[in-house]
Image 1 (spheres, rainbow, N blue to C red):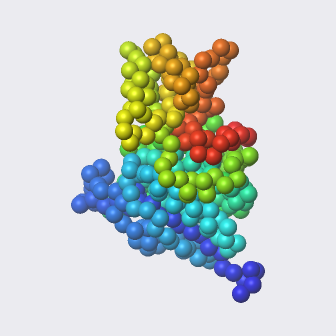
Image 2: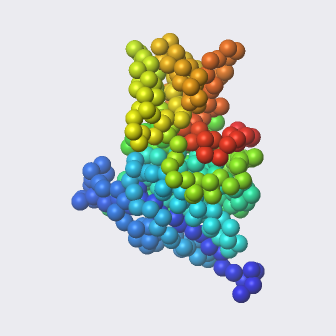
Image 3: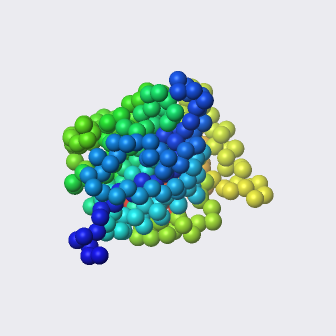
Length: 340
């Protein structure tokens, strides 16, 4: 069969989550168990998919089966390898990943950072989720999957994206902002990339630009890791002290303990820190631990000021700053960004 005659494919990679969850009654939208149905079962229950695919073949693959609160580095590694593999296939139009909502933003940013820029410059990787289990009488997963497929096959779509409740977000900005609402995600000050409306995509901003100058073998580096570096997140608050920092650093002296190599602190306001906490973080930095300041504010970026003792997160939320730090420790030097 020639390349011209090949049937285009959309690959759906399943990782579990609420979208594959079940409850004992159709009215229960909270007391469910996530990650119970296979991705194939989830897709089979969506009769409208054939229309959305427009003659393309749908390929389902189960990469993992987890509640996303339990997402792990090993699943991230396997997911990145499978996405990279499928993106390299000439007959694959785009990729959809079904994922739990709780850590979707971290997985999206991870993939945004490690996937080869040349691959995601021409194809879209779309994460989607659900806020209600598959057994709910008002399940939102089926429509989210159809929207994700529609987005993945849209002409010109590229980069790592997320779609939930018809709203399209880029991996760099997407953030879960509500624990139960169907439209649970936001892109902060920049606003969403667009909307999926009646099977079509309406853009409000340009498609995201991939990372440039990232370590060439980032995914291979990750796949060969025995242990990921340990990076923890702290928060500034009333009465904050340096005790947690000191305790984390002292753990590295215990037998078989993995030393902390990085700390991300969610500061108040513009990354401000209680003086005791800041002093402890400066000491940690002097000992070779990487330290970055983000903000606990739901939107906005930390603006650097002259004389800052600790570097800022360059606009990343605490959880995404942690992902960036992990990857910088695994595959230095730290990648440059463009096109925010």
